Length: 153
Image (cartoon, rainbow, N blue to C red; front, side, top):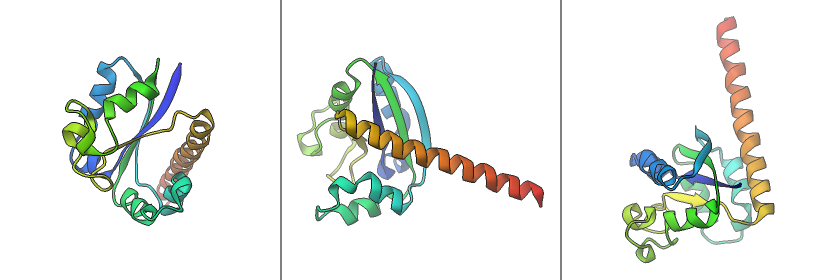
C-alpha cells in the first residue's frame, strides 16, 4: 500500500479546516495512519524545506510554517499520492478546480496555501518520513521528560 505525508499548514489549522480536509481523504477510502498537531521549530522547517533553500521565497516559507501549529498526517491507500494531489488541487488556487481543497478554500500561493503533499519520489518520502518521525518522537520524549520533572517537584 502506498503512503504519503500531508501537512495542514497554519492557515488551514487557524481557519478550522482540519476536519474538512480529513473528511475528504476518508470519504475517498484512504486510511489515516498517524496524526499529530505540532508547532514546528525553525531548524526543523529549514531541514524539511532544504531542497527549496536556494529559492527567493524560502525564508518566507519557513517563517510561515513556524507561525502557528500544523497538523502532520500520514495517509495510506492505493494511489494515495496521485489521488491526494487531485483532492488538494493545483498549487495555484486560481487554477484549482472547484471541489478541490485549494479550489474551495485557498486564497493565494504561499501564506494562503493550506496543505502540502509529499513528493511521490520514494527517496524523498523516506527522507521526510525519517525527519518527521525523529521530530515527533523527540517531541514526545521531551514532553514526557518535562512532565516527569514537574511531577518530581
